[in-house]
Image 1 (cartoon, one colour):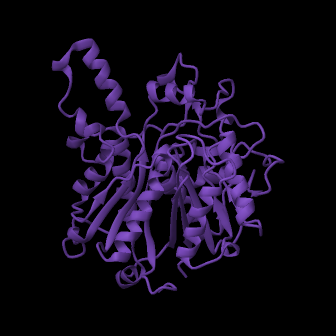
Image 2 (cartoon, one colour; image 1 turned 135 degrees about the vertical axis):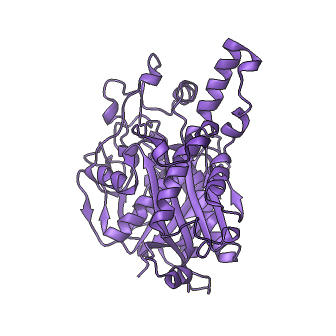
Length: 414
């Protein structure tokens, strides 16, 4: 039990579909190697930014119910694959009525943009072929809540479901919601995380016009450079990250491993600008402080920070300022976006998966494409190679357009 007598919330299952691979282990291995997943993208040919971090090709029919794929956008499909992996990892079988009470299972899957592929394809078909060519499935395919809805449907989860949409903090928001459901007793198990698959010509062009994307078209594999002196924007990515959460005592009763504990959550809103952060991360600091307080620990108890750091000059500088100000003892810092790009609403959940693995395996992956952080930043950035390090407690930050700030504290389960 925690300081306030609230049930400890355990992570018992992990699932991931990322540009580094299909599954948690493939993703972890490539991130630990510090390999960039960015490459030229034929689907973006002719645009000002013609590269991205896409999920590698795989046969989704091997991992999902074939007859239902026609009604699902890509963001939903990859969420289903990640959820299936996470449930298997948690030793939960939805087909076993003796071990699965669907009425006590919730689903919280955040999403930033929803069915971007469906939207753009539908608009083009309407323009070229007329109204009769538009599928009646367009609306359910493009709704951002459909990943949560289809996961609930696929696994018979009849408890509460929700699709938080806090831009690039959506996945982290979903994990905070899931924790609340478990603490309050509304659920016994929650399938939680985030997903986004929005690498389309319109979305990429819009982000480029906003000035958010890297323009390093001559060297796309080196474009995402979190905390570097010469970073110039993020690289669009797609991904899904799912965690299975349950009360630690319930996991112990089931005899399954507790991979880590989700010990604290905090949130705040900048209320400053639609897209720009507070330049010193002052309001995001409130989210960090709230997460630490919720976990019942102090700043000095944090051994590692998995940073939001997207490789934008403004965002990275604000977060670096926040980290150095709050964590004067200098915990290790890494950003997975150097390797994986920025998967928008999925990022916070994917990075939560990686944070759990850092705790579990006493290892912090390097920040790809960066030899050393900018001399302007006073942070202990892990670069070049994996750092072997005991991580007893770690912080994962997620920040989104609209001023959304979410911080999560994980700690070891033992």
